[in-house]
Length: 315
Ligand code: UDP
Image (cartoon, rainbow, N blue to C red):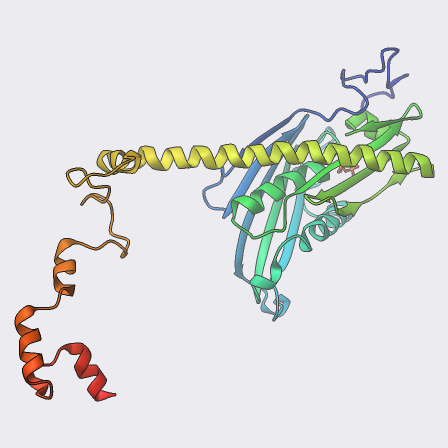
């Protein structure tokens, strides 16, 4: 374990890692990288490296956990034994159970669980590398994995911590600031500004608490913008890939802006989705002149009535 630094903030107001007091660490986001999960996200938050995978809505096992009127949300936070300086004993411990519980509660109200009665939405978090703030980084990743899985939500959840070192409030603590600081307060916030998680370690005055909360909320808003951009970029790229994979002819047809009779938008290469009508079908819909004449002459003769009239007769 590293030694306690003498000072956390230098004479220029910068922290030991060069950040300003209200600056979050760099964030890198990759969405949809696990093939077997319904939704996934790899996220780096400073030196934290996190993988989030979402499965569901799916059947609940064990069955007794299922709820008749809504889906249950399960959240499993796991810290890999190699993710920290001193090897962590593998498997769940009191800390990971606590982190899983508060993180699940941060999402439960934001997901439209009532749309999926008797089912489960499972969120798995693997901490591959830890450097303080893993629960907040994991919540950011989980939020994107849920969106990637297409789980209907009221909005995204964004999360970061505020803390205190050298009697100064700082945003998004790193490992030394977390270990030796005076306070650590992680929060999670919904897109419309609702606080869905708030924890606190250490001491803050009422004034510090209010100011710290504002700083953390501002941090969450910045993270939300990054999450939103990552989702938009991901789906833009996915769209491009789909068009690249499509047969050349249909790509040409999609891009055709004005269709003429010689160059119709719907070509034989476009898969029929059941809504397209071909010329033969149109011809069938035009009443046969000969049949119409006979019908006019002998309407009651069931041998020459159309299918439609026959159905009416049966009714
Ligand atoms: N940590 C560790 N071993 C553990 C648990 C935590 O080394 O068994 C480190 C890890 O870097 C973690 C940091 O302590 O990020 C702070 O942990 P805390 O419980 O405050 O949660 P976090 O800030 O990661 O959400």
